[in-house]
Image 1: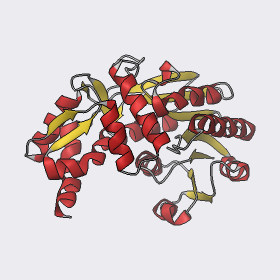
Image 2: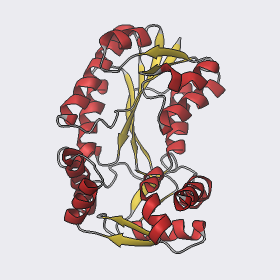
Image 3: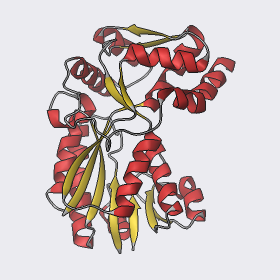
Image 4: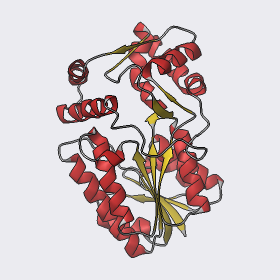
Length: 296
């Protein structure tokens, strides 16, 4: 009996896989390239080569499994929302046929808002596809990833600035992906009953301006937050080579954030509050990455 992870090569999936192995769980991971999952295989994970879009791959991975962690890949191409829902419907149907009873779905704050919140609009339907087919489903509605600061390495290193269309003083939950993986591991290891939608909110809500100040203090240098317009953000993303469809989705998400539609539906409580502080994340992850960017 095993737990299946559909995205073992990303920050959350890999940390989750390692944590479950440490807990003595048997795991199966799906990977297009088995070489990328070689460390997990060496630790005892079963690796199924293939795509989550392939029914035969899912059937092979789900055989004998008791649990599933499902993360919707960021396949931001035209038709993304329909693709994400279809992928979830396929996986949920095959998981039910295989006898899987428990699924942890990675979702996001704002998933309750429906249309108009960029890529997050795909996640409410993904939650529904699993909830409508399986008896025990937890949707982890996570806050803003601290890892998103890694996208700002260049401007932090060169200018000491972070540019974004997010309102400078609008506070949002901010969480490290390691905390999300830990919460998912606890649920899959310990179990639960029924359908739950749980927040994963990090230690505190922070505004972009406050986040930049904390990052700067942990780096030992001043870091300024600069709010840009949605139009400026769109132009910058297009200049950076991000496809227009994806860039417009991201801008839509930031507009929704500024309007409060990305605020969490789940209240902050002891269960949703996790431990990794932004200052600690900056010292452990962001500082060496900024130093490397500055040296290039």
